[in-house]
Image (tube, helix red, strand yellow):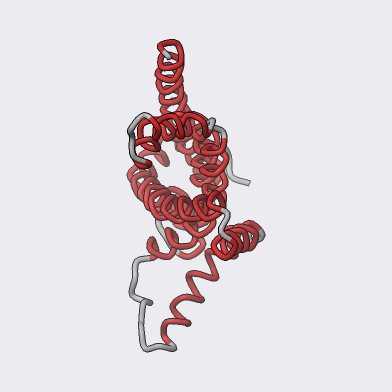
Length: 235
């Protein structure tokens, strides 16, 4: 067993930190595309139309039963094979495209439920009062419902973002070089030496990112809650 060299943690950090941007980019892409799908799922369940609601519930049920690593492999190996049957070759696409696609599919199901719960948590009488006062449906949603729903959604959304960051580490299994991927490469290049030091360096990076996410969303939630309380007191 190799001796422990704590000073190598700094060396590993300096080599891995430049790849934090890749991890964040994968998260951003997943939030954007997963969020769009999540909005459609939430809308389908809120509107209660039979066919869209059944499709949304089926989607959520199926995707929640699939582990992240399994979905990643299905997308990475399955989509190119399926499209190739129609003469479309996507094997040259960046691995990041497949990572974002796989995690967006999974992220959307949970995010759709968060959006739906946040929307239903707002008293519908407020939207009706806003429409009666002359606002359009969109204006009532944007000015009245959305700010309050955001306060309800932020805690769950921040937790989902942290989980997404941790599950995103699985992307190295298909060869994407992000934080986890670069750490694995370092271990391989060192032939297993300094493995503990490298893993500790990665743990520090993920811990720091988690802390930053929690601080940002904590302040955002506090800011929105103040606005909500102020609006309530004025009313």
